[in-house]
Amino acid sequence: MTQPLLQHICQVIYDSHVGTMIRESDYAFSIIESVHVLAITLLVGSISILDLRMLGLILREIPVTRVSRAVFPITWTGFAVMLTSGLLLFWAEAAKNYLNPAFRIKLLLLLLVGLNPLIFHTSIYRRVAEWELQHRSPWRARAAAIASLTLWSGIIVAGRAIAYF
Image 1 (cartoon, one colour):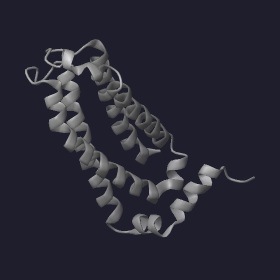
Image 2 (image 1 turned 120 degrees about the vertical axis):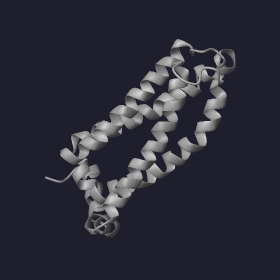
Image 3 (image 1 turned 135 degrees about the vertical axis):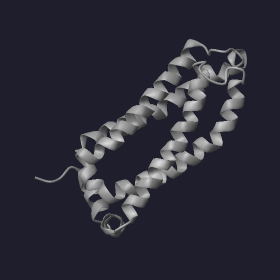
């Protein structure tokens, strides 16, 4: 019986020179993993500031657009570093991650957390000028904030769980 195509691709990535080098290095994997965790801190920390503002829990006197302009450079920097380091970590362990249920959950949650701001920015955020000075945002903005915080929490938990499956 042949392997499914995706599993075969993961095995090829795993067996590659780069994957092997990262895996067999005394320091590479742990350094990349540390960078990944720090990038997640930047990303989720900056997103959390905006989410908590929309929930009316912090920075209530500051307009939502001002908060978002302040945190987005940090968010995008964290995202770029997290994505790069995450791909390197996957490269080193692609074959193992293919069957890992925690990894699959993390990928699903990443898909959902990516859809959340897409939906938010193409709907309720288009009318931000109408509500950004309110201490508490409209229910749809609060729902997006709660979804964001919940999904990112799940991603972090699933990411840690990868090592135990």
